[in-house]
Structure formats: C-alpha cells, structure tokens
Length: 215
Image 1 (cartoon, rainbow, N blue to C red):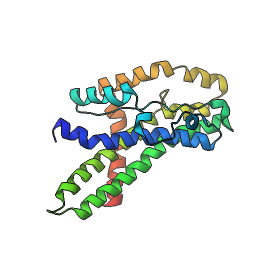
Image 2: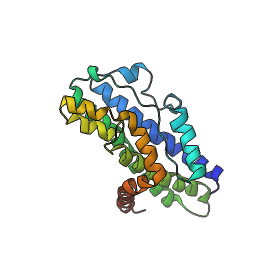
Image 3: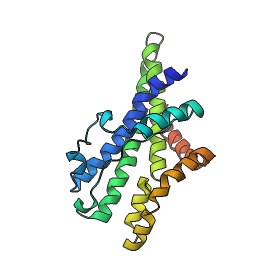
Image 4: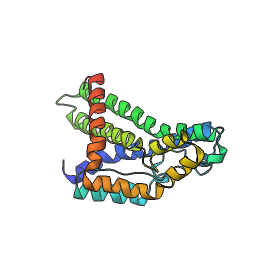
C-alpha cells in the first residue's frame, strides 16, 4: 500500500482504538461514582470529542512520514478522584479499563479478520482484502496501546495501578514524575527502546490471537 491507502485503511482502527480506550476509562469511573466524563460529554463514540490535535493527528502523521510507524493518543478522560467510592482502589480499576478495552477490541478485530478469510474469493477480494488489512492493523494498534499503557511510567495507566498500592506520601512522590513521563515516552520512541520493550509482548499476544482464531 502507498501512504494514502495506508492512512485510509488505518484511520478507522486507530480512531476506534484510542476512542474506546478513553470511553472505557470514563464509563468505569461513572460506574464507580464519578460522573465527570459523562457531564463533559466524553462517554461517546464520536471520535471528534476525543481528538487531541497533537496526539491524534500531528504525532501519528509525523511518525508515519518519518519512521513508517504509527502511534497516537486521545485527550485523556477527566476523572475526579474525590468522587470515587473507594478512591485508591477505584482509580486502579479506572486505569485498567482502558487497556482492557484495547484487548477486547483486538479480539473483535481478530473476528473481522476471520470473516475476511471466510468470505475471500475472486469475486469478493475487493471487500475481503481491505477488511483483512484493517483487521491486522486493528489487532496491532490495540495490542500496542494495551501494552504501552500498562507500563508503570506516569501518566500511563500502569502508573495509576502502581500508585494505588503505594502508601500516600510515596504515591504522591511517584506521581510527580508525570511531568517527565511524556518526555520519557518520546525518548523511548526516538531511541528505539520502545520497540524492544513493547515489541516482544505485542508479538507474543498477536501470535496467541492468531492461533486462537486460526488466522
């Protein structure tokens, strides 16, 4: 595929991956007592509500043009810590909801890939082939987002889980690293350490899903 074709096929899986990730955070927070995301209109599948000009548009395009790798993020869903019924425990559950949603979407895209294989024929190649490419990217994007967000680097979701198990003063000091978190993530991308840290578990999970669905 050329760049235009790749963007056309990748747009839907990427938008769904980052949108549903954020909606899952807000939905679980609502169930646990915090209506902030709902009140701000963030519990919606409309990607426009979740688009971050830098993370959803600029960064993915720059990475695609310079490295061939695509990665991005949406606007974080706001969560009011004090509204949660059991703040420390519930914040961890809210954090895990995003990666869990990505895992669920990876499995759904695997079903789409299976459907593409079932309907594939010379007469349906015009439909089956784009579906297969889209499903492959959907599986990959969601697994990357899931594994990346589980890293214990503030402000990633994994850091929220770690913070929930730390004593108050230690959790506060740990969360103060959030201001350096995005810098650390960018450095991981630039140096290639990102692919080494995330690449192996993503590849193993992808092989597991492929075997599970007979792809």
